[in-house]
Image (cartoon, rainbow, N blue to C red; front, side, top):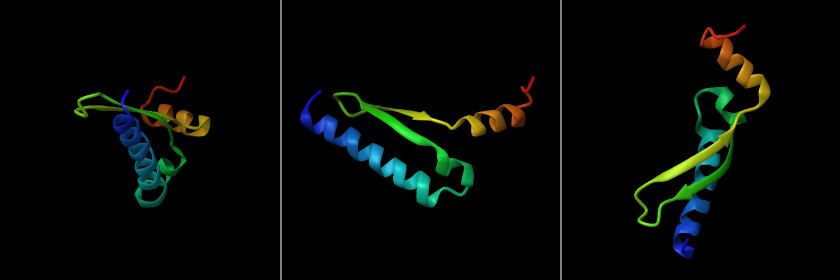
Length: 68
């Protein structure tokens, strides 16, 4: 990966984290953590990896009707 691609991935990660923590309308989104961002060399795609706390995973399962 070139330096510019790495820099863009880092910037995207920071900006997404800020958006989730400060501007998300759903309070649950503030608990989501961006773990990694990968950008293609031609800058056409970015893949965002994230984690969700366990208490939110349970809530998501219940909301989707998949709780066993």
